[in-house]
Image (cartoon, rainbow, N blue to C red; front, side):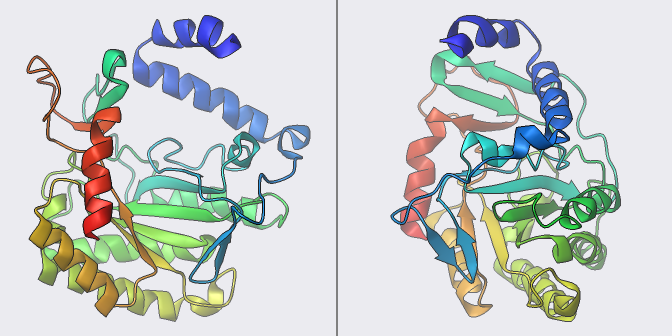
Length: 290
C-alpha cells in the first residue's frame, strides 16, 4: 500500500533514470549501515539450488542492469534475493548513450532502455567489491559480475583484450562471471554471438579463469556464464548452447532485452532494448530451445 499509493506516484513523476539513480543513492547509503544488512537469508530446503558448486539459497536473483556498479550489493539480499548480479561493467569507464535513455511503458508493464553500458569501469568496481570481500559477513548470497565490451574498442584482438582486462580485474571477487554478448545498445556487440567469435572469446576467458584460480575467493576457477539475446533465430540459439556445452561453461543466462516490438503498439518506435511483460513469451521460448 505504501509503495502503490505513495512511493510509486513520486517515482513515476520523475524521469526514469533520475528515479533509478536516486533510489540507488539511498540504498547505497543504507548499505553502509550494519543494522540495515543484519538479517537472515530467505531460504528453504525446497528453494535451494546448486550450480557448478555455487549454492543459491533461492532461485530468484537481482539481474544485471539494476546495480551496474555494485553500489548497494550488501543490501539486496534484504529484499529476499537469492543471488545478486552486478554490471554490465566495461574495462574502461564510459558514460553510455546520450540521455534520455530509459522510457516507461506502464500500460504494458515494460521498459525500453538504451543506456549503452554506462559504467564506472572495471578498475573502480573491482576496488569496491574487494573491500566487501575483506569482510566475509558482508556478502550473504552468491555474487555474479557481468562484463561487456567497451564501446570504442574495435577489432577482434582488441575486443578479446578488453574482455580479458575486465575478467582479470573482477573474476577473483566473483562467485560467477557473466559474459554479456547480447545487449542491443552497444554497436557490434551481438556479432560476438556468431559461433567462431563466441568460441574464441569464451575459450580465452576459460583459460584466464584457470590462471587466476589461485587468487580467487574459492581457490578454483571462476564459474562462467554467457548471456544471450532473445532475437536470435533458433539455429543460432542452438549454436550458442552447443558452444557452451563444448567449452564446459557453467550455464546460459536467457535472455537479454529485445529489439523486437512484436505484439505491442505500432506507436512504440523508441530505439533500445525492451524488457518486462512483452518479453516473457519470447524469453521463455528461448529457454525452451536452449
